[in-house]
Length: 212
Image (spheres, rainbow, N blue to C red):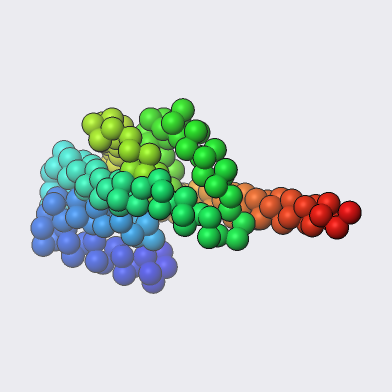
């Protein structure tokens, strides 16, 4: 475990020692708002803490899921306050983004929004960020809460149980998930580079066509 993760683990441990299961919920709520805080460290640690009898296993699952939902709901309302018009206004100022890109994203989210919210809760990095477009698109709050809760409960149960069963070896979980997170991040970086390359290519073609 790196020194940063040691610090996060120590911080989360302090919250759990002081507040018990609600401390684990608070840590996960903050993890939603600040994605660099890794749930793959906090959740197994909560399971390990439960295995030592410092909190109930069911309490750990309930409070971490509640923390996930509260954090996601805060981001949902940030997206809702931002709104479609402000998003388009911001996008129009970005050099390589077109309003049509936003419109395509809106159409895609309208079609796949429920699945995106549910499965997005189980994808490292994006599990927090997916709440923002849900708010921008004004997904019904009840629907958002239902599928956020279901996705979060599934994700949290897997990691809390892993920490509970692994005991002192709970840190092994972070190692495996860290590989997955790097794959996801690498895929996103590649996709962004391809997008930029295509957009620059379109601009170059447009300039050549204008000179003719």
